Amino acid sequence: MENITIEALYDLTHTIAADYLRKFVYPWEALRGISDLILALGEKLDPSEYDRPAEHVWVHKSANVFPSAYLGAPCIIGANTEVRHCAFIRGSALIGENCVVGNSVELKNVILFDNVQTPHYNYVGDSILGYKSHMGAGSITSNVKSDKSLVGVRCDGKRIETGLKKMGAMLGDFVEVGCNSVLNPGTIICPHSNIYPTSCVRGVVPEESIWKNDGVIIRKTR
Image (tube, rainbow, N blue to C red; front, side):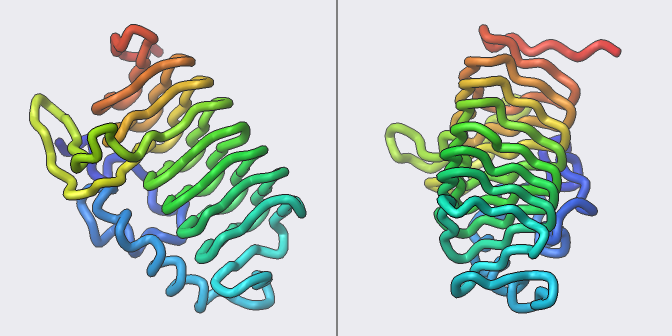
């Protein structure tokens, strides 16, 4: 199960949450503390670089936030990030540099590493998205099971109990998610992997793999 640790999934040089994430082995262990993390980080941000349009909301002066976007506290929006028309940041969102939060996208209790793109009609909740990961149009993270039971992660034929009722997806660095895909609770997609459009994904997708529409996983060829 070493392939689903924070160390295996993420290059921590691409997030200001690095020191916080290093406290944990698995990424879902970090979900409970995102709100407190943002509050602690926000108070240390340089006011000459960050605006504070509302209490516990910090926006880098180089970021482009459309007037129709909603910024719920607490949140941090990094340098050169674009938050587009009618984006709904519900709160507990740590958004890195050079990110795109697009039209009608909803974020809640998330860490977005630098250069993450959620550009069109995405829902991302209780999730961590690694460096240069990309959510295709209409793709979402489903963060609650239909029977409301606690989420488990299935890896190597074993089930790891998370103790969480809400857990979306953990996307490693350079992951590409195809349009209109659903990432079911507890999904982990390892770095450099691709998800076919309209997929319904669950479990662990190994590094440098392709998840096809019928759930078949194949290794990428160079």
